[in-house]
Amino acid sequence: MFPTVSLGLLAGLGLVSGLGVDSLPLWRAALYLVLAVLAYLHGRRLDGRFGWQILLGVGVAGAGVAFVDIGEATSALLSMAVMIGLPWLAGRYRRQQALLIETERERVRQLEREQEHVAERARLNERGRVAAELHDSLGHELALIALRAGSLELSPQLTAEHRQTAGEMRASAVAATDRLRQVLEMLRDRDEVPPVAEIVGRARDAGMVVHVDGLAVMPTLVDQAVRRVVREALTNAARHAPGAPVDVRLAVTERRVALVVSNPAAEARPGGGSGLVGLRERVRLLGGRLETTHDQGRFELTAEVPVA
Image (cartoon, rainbow, N blue to C red; front, side, top):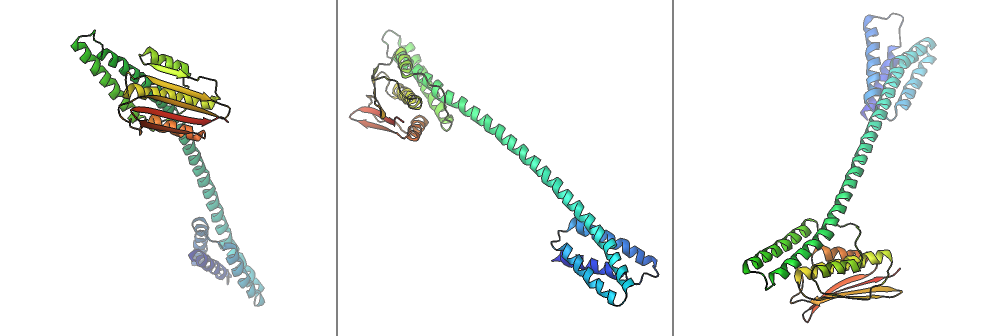
């Protein structure tokens, strides 16, 4: 409301100032200058929505003076146009120019923020891939180290002192694996996992007893999921049931792939680790399911994945 009223007041003053200009005292000349400056500042600072309509309305009102004196009407309209209209237009032009510049600057800042966001996202993705590599590969290796240390701990050929050292090394490896899982539990990403035969071979080289049945060629995504499940299952077996034989059974048909990994276990394993949670989510995204059960002293992990 204020910009509208103030512009109308300025236009009226400019119109009145154009009357009786036969003699132009100094104060009237100063008034013209003040009106011009105020009109410019009005256009530059205030956002008037109906500026053109107000100026036109005041001009029409001033034209009514023509019925009395055409010369006075012409002088009044000219005064309003020169002292109010032109400065106001100049101020509006400068205001729009400043707004365009500010809009362009804001756009540049937004593009810079987007570029920083993209760069940060790329860094986070890379960190996620590195973290996943540590979680899957290093965790598996630590579990195998713990298994070897456990074998040394039970070896009758070593002295008591050496067996105690092996036990401490096994406990340290298990603790390091747990800390690694806790730190990286929320970071999972796709990485290359070796074939099931290679995973089983490495576990056997570490001293595990693993029986495998039903290895076959599978689609890429399903094969990656099966590899991850087998690796996680063997890692958990090495950590929670060292020395126990592990059975890995695969049944591959045209419609689905069924995987069962089982081993003797005195008690149920905790199921809240990031490994099984991540695998369960991966299998679910493929349209399958992953379940773990503990019954009659035997732990069993079952995964079913449909073949697209």
